Each structure stands twice: as structure tokens, then as C-alpha cells.
Image 1: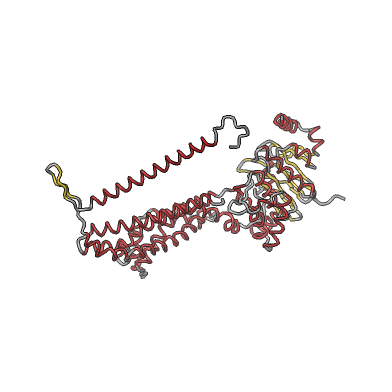
Image 2 (image 1 turned 60 degrees about the vertical axis):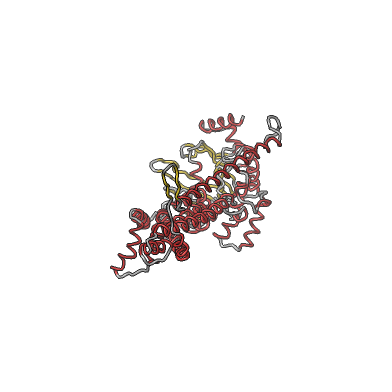
Length: 282
Length: 255
């Protein structure tokens, strides 16, 4: 477009046509993907529709779900959504704080702080999340520290995700070039001012999309907290009614659908946020 | 009677590991003088410049800026305070501009005065707009750096440094990252800053600028100052064969 002569350039109308064709191609692709999703979903429903089909002397049966049970218990299971979201939000907030400290500690030149940060990350990443939840809930009471299911869950999830997220933050911090720090220092900023005014704002912007991903997977890992038996979130409710009435199939399918829809909604917002950040006035 | 220099470097040494990059350098810069530091890459000219405001920590020797004397081997809180004071006296312009991408042009320029000096925001904006105007960038004050050309970025960076009201301006290859057609606008702004009486130390490859604007040209090679003269003398009658070679290289590059 910046060329001075018009030589070799195609007429504007032709370029426009090519561009439109390209757009059409992309639209058609997206439409076909959408239709295929619909078909896959119908197949899934069909598999659970309880049909008997005679075909060449064989009888095929699809899985029969107890729809009466579903209608009776759907509100009970849905009642766990609030708890699931509450745990996820509290845990992610705690995780962000932990991740920030761990990432900053990792940059410290003071050996004990550096060691504390790497020790924390190593210990947490070296042990199962499931164990960590139980540790807070079952092991600590032996030391006289009794925590409720929710508190144990939030502490364990927060510490666990914090350890993983610290890597994201660290990448964010190191994405801010050395020149930025030098410019701030040359202006006479203290290391603290440089961090708060120059480095962190840029690092956080870098770290927000991966943090969104972590939040989405947190909503699913929060199901592990049900193992304490005292947090009435989605998973706990599904296993409770499922076991009691021998309808685990239906109960778990319901819970799975709730998790899935929740993830789809969060992913949608996540992609909106990402698009906005990427075109923002950086 | 000679005035006391505004920048005084005494017996400065700098090591990168075992590499001796600055070798016992002493240099005095009188107020209002414009000095161009030239030399091949790796000669230590940028390192010397960066030692003046301690972006690079010298290994040995003394730096004095406007009466504040810092010993390279000083330590602790006292030393940090001295370095801070020196940085308040010096403005720096980088090869890569280093504007803050998350702030608008105006925010970039007032950041120093407001955060570091605690200047009243209104006053800082006034001062910033004045300096942006003098580098011809006031019309972009609400833009973000991403939307500026390299030359525009560098002019904003100069305004940012000037708004701290430094006594000395340090330029570290300010035009080396620019497309050739954008170099002129930055050099013009630097010329203007020079004519307004600012003391300037400029690391550069722009021989034209050195010839027209500098009061003094200093040649560095292998961590030493090998020649120090006014530009006419240096370019027409270089004493050191290494200076001659350097000038020849630039001459052939200019054609």
C-alpha cells in the first residue's frame, strides 16, 4: 500500500474480491465446525436415549438413563454451583497472592528469600493436590489445627495453583525488558518504584490470559474438595445422591454437564478478555 | 580562572569478569560542553557513559557530577543515596528509547518528576508539555509509544529526560536504532538541546553531528581514551593511527 507507483498493483476492486472470498472461506469453515459439533452432541444424546433398535436380526440398545431421577435431583446438584464458584474464586485470589510472592522471591538476590520461594514451589509441585487437600483437612487436626472443609480446600488449592502460577508470573516479569528497568533507574526511581510503576503493570498484562486459563481449570479441580465430605459443591452433591439411589450414572452426567457448561461460559469470557488485551494500547 | 568541571571521572576501571573494559580513565567535562565519544564497537564508550550514572557499576575510581562525588568502591545505604543523587543530576537517552509502553506520551514524561521528585502533577504536566513542545511532540501527547515512529519515540525520550531538569544529558547511541530517514529529526533536537546550553556526553557514530555540534571529540579504543581534541583538529589532523583508521571507516561508510 505504501508503494509510490501503481505498477504491478491489482485494482482495488479485485483485491476486495479476494479479501471477501477469504472471509467467506473462513465463515464456511466455522459453520461446518459448528454443524459437526451439533451432530456429535446429538450422537452423545442418542447414546443415552435408551433406544432399542432392531437391525438385521440384532438388537442394539443405547444406554437408558433414569429421567425421573434427573428431574427430581437437578436442582439439588445445581445447588452446588455456588459453592464450586466460591471455592474457585477464593482459591484463585489466594493463588495470585502466593504466585506473586513466589515469583518476586525467585528474582530476589537475598539467598533465604530465593530459597524460600524455590522450596515452596518444589514442595507443592512435588506432591499431589489430592494429598495436599487431605493434609489440611485430616493431618492438621492432629496438631490441634482444625480447619473446615472449605478453608482446607481453599488453602490447598490456593497454595497448589500459586506454585504453578508463579512460573506464569515469572515469565511475565522477565518479559519486561532490561531497558525498562534501566530507564526507570536512570530517572532515579528506587527498586520498589521501578517494580510497582514500571515492571509489574507490564508483567500483569502479560500474565492475565494464562491466569484466566488457570481459573478455568481451578473450577474443575475444586471437585477434589468434595473428598473432605464437608463441602457441598457440585461433585459432592452428585456423588451423594448418585450413591444413595444407585443412580451415579445420571448424577455424574448431570455434574459433568454443569462443569462443561461452566467451562464453556468462562472460556468465552476468557477469549473476549484476551482479544481485548491483545489489541489494547500497548 | 577555569571553572570546576560538572562531570569529573577519576582513575576509573571497569571489569566484566576478567575482561578489563575501562582502563584507568580520567576525564573532565566543563559545564555547557558537548562531548562526542566515538570508537569501534567494544571499545568501551557505552560502558563509560553508563558508569557515569551507575547503570554500570564501575570497579574502581571516582565519579563526580555537579559536586556529588561517588567512590566506585563505596557500599551500603550511603552509596545508594549518592547514586540516586547523581541520577537526579543526569538525564539519559537510550539507543532503544525505552519508553514505558503502558503509559501515554505525557504520562511517560511526567512519571519521573511526579514519582521520583514528588512534583505536583499539574506543575509536572506544564513542564512536560513545554518540553514535548520543544522536541515537536506535543501533538502526540495522548498517544501510546506503540503508535510512534522510532524518531518520534526518541524525541519523547529526550523530553522525558529533560523534564527531570538534569545538569548533564547522556546519550547512548541515540540514533543507532533508527531508520536512516528518521535520524535527522533526532539529531536536530539534540542540536537544539546543545544550543540551549546543556552539558552533553554523546556516544555516537554520527560523524556529521560530531563535526557540527561537538566542542570536543574523544576517541576510545580498547578501554582507553586515545585522542581528545576539538572536531576540526581531530578530523583534519588525527594524531593516532587508530583514529585515522576509524575516520577512514566512517568516510567510506558515508559514501
